[in-house]
Picture 1 (cartoon, chains in turn green, purple):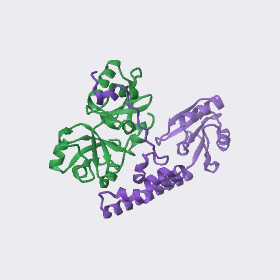
Picture 2 (cartoon, each protein chain N blue to C red; picture 1 turned 30 degrees about the vertical axis):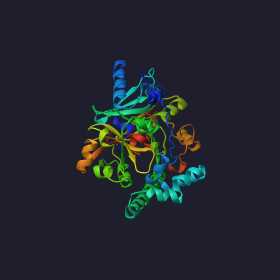
Picture 3 (cartoon, rainbow over the protein chains, first blue to last red; picture 1 turned 90 degrees about the horizontal axis):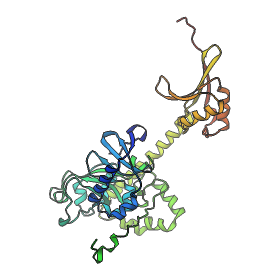
Picture 4 (cartoon, each protein chain N blue to C red; picture 1 turned 60 degrees about the vertical axis):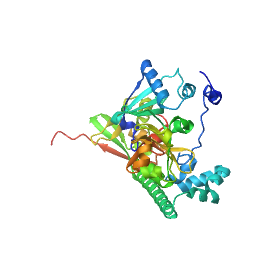
Length: 184
Length: 198
């Protein structure tokens, strides 16, 4: 989604977000992410008001003082930026890919099931099944930090069974153009 | 909140983890090997932080990293990285060459017999913020200066009045935002208004 992203041409406009909308976003974050209100408070203090940066293709970036915090495509789940995820790696459920898949991930490709189900990959056990359409942190074999963030295309149990085709759609990864943006 | 013993940390906000990013490629250090400037990243890290360097690039670390990947795939990966790196270097070279070859054109355009405007084109290749430069010209010469699109659709600065000589001087001295432009690349042109004939 952010493989090619140029602030000068792809940003349509910036607006500040209404208080009531901010409240609902906050509630959404708390329900979608594995995060406590106290931790969210340190990322996004209650007093601070965030700005909505509208971009092409229905992408919205929410930024605090110009620093992107999280992104949303249409009505998809809210996705933190990698910089936030690196600071608070526990907020999203984890999936892991094997070493061979890293270079594809860092080229922006969606993650195929075999890369997740193979020995180097990681999928949560059956009782912590991640359903379709959830934001997940993509970790890589032998690395401590997340390499990308995606949205599941099928539930993790289905990935194990079908083991074919796209398992996680890559939204944001190391080295894409959003990663390069420090300030909007 | 009814906090059980394992839930006690929930009250305190969790402190953020500070991830160290590479100064060269901006990735977390462990991902340098997938960047386009791996060799440089490695060198910089070795100089700035030998301990961390050992952690990531010592023999054992390299062995452990191999993990489940077959040797074949590893070799291919290394080849790919080398290729990517070469590509990035070539790209940077080409960009530099282009920059060196590009010119800043200062054009004096006749508006009517005694009045001129000066248009400056090509500053942006040298990393000059056009808006700021226009402002600088405006304050310096106390005239109007604006960023406009020329017929080719490229941005240029138009300054009112004939100030071409002064602008050349400013660029040579590198005043304000006009730093780092080699004076060899500056060309002065004059454009006269065509007589009514054709």
